[in-house]
Length: 108
Length: 404
Image (spheres, each protein chain N blue to C red):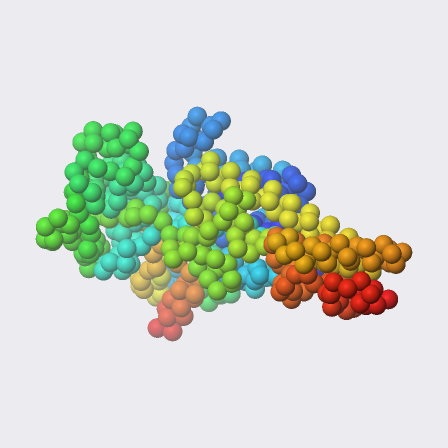
């Protein structure tokens, strides 16, 4: 996997201090739907190099992060820009839906 | 062409992997195209206790063994989604989402099924915000909360019990009269004895309620027709499966109204060289063990079909002698008589030709390939190419004159 994993500290730095435009997938190891969505993001990532960040949170390792966003399931892709939450995509999402959402966030 | 295989299997669940094991062992150049995780839906099963040889095993572990087994026979794997197919010709072609193209002599369709959606208000909108389909993935998010489970099959009841490890209470919504569940008896008994599980009988779910997150569900009593609301923070849907065969619509393969593919004992579909196995075909039992049996049957049938194809190629298309390809129908007397006459004429003229008989009842695609509609019919082939068609008359001299 080429996505950089975030913990509570690095999450804080990248999302709120650096205000990077990015997405963060909340996932866990034994979730079969995640295993379909994560590789799709992996492949999408190079197209957005330098423009849009792709990150990863393991909900088992960083429970407080999913509690903070009161998430009710994985996988969920959360979008951020300028230190603000921009919405999410839940469950088995298609590549096209992610691309659309990224475009929306970048053009906002 | 590098992307040419003997056998391509679409789907990497137990049916597809078993077919791959048999295909690989028969030394067919075999490719499995699978879009998700190898193992398919079995990966969602925490515990399997009825696969022979394994007293107790997790779904993902069992599928790892299947996968390794197939790899040991030299089977290739590709993680991609198939988006379109052309299976009606002798050479089958398959296109993936990323634009790759493959061809094969035989294709086994093993793409399984996916959870059915009820398409009720709130179901899609609140997905990931309380609406869930996988207990292993999501049960933990409902620690100390109230959860509703919709359905009463094996999966619903077993997953419901797993959710009680985290949730405060699990309410199961059941279509049937009190006491009747669709699941196996062992699980039903366990569920009835579980103090955290409650049941609502004769009911169905009409709507998932909530703005940002699930706040409750609207239920309808099937006997009285009255509606009621139940407060909860989560809803897990286990309302059956639908076959993942949408990409096959309009490719010529027969599919029933619900999306399942009908096959015969050999797992043959209506298209020659195309087989369907596992959950995406019409069948009685959908278990790992029956999926494995399907895969084995189809791979052996495919192997024999490919063998016949190869024999035809070497016997007919690459024959040194000119070939008389005779299309026969055993039910038509004239066809059989003509066959005898053709043999006679050929032997009298020093066996200039090799006669190859084709039974129209079983070799439908050959008849189609040469556009033959009635028997008898004869095509004269030289080095695999058609040079003429005979007029099939039961007259020795007329026939002889055509063969000079």
